[in-house]
Length: 99
Image (cartoon, rainbow, N blue to C red; front, side):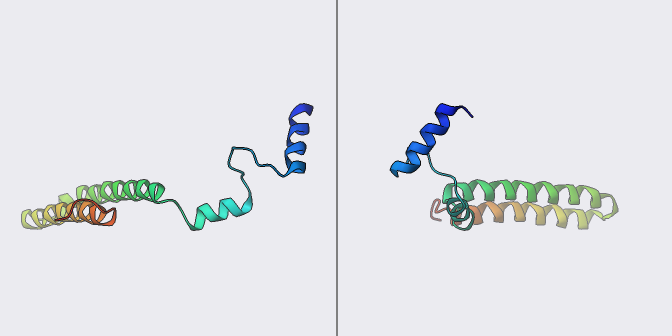
């Protein structure tokens, strides 16, 4: 860090003026952790839904060899209902279209 930058930071701290950048301190980090923004949570939920669908698909693929044809049909239908239900849940949670 250069001497000029240190001098600038000390001057800002002494004058009490805050720069336009958001300050990173313990309070702001804890506030963002315990009260996350809704836009961020929408992305987190989408990522979790995709991961859950991928894991369910792999589980369905691995168990597919040991199931009978009726069991496999039931498992695939349950998987499709799960996928549809998860997207319907996300749609209602985010205030999407009314059905």
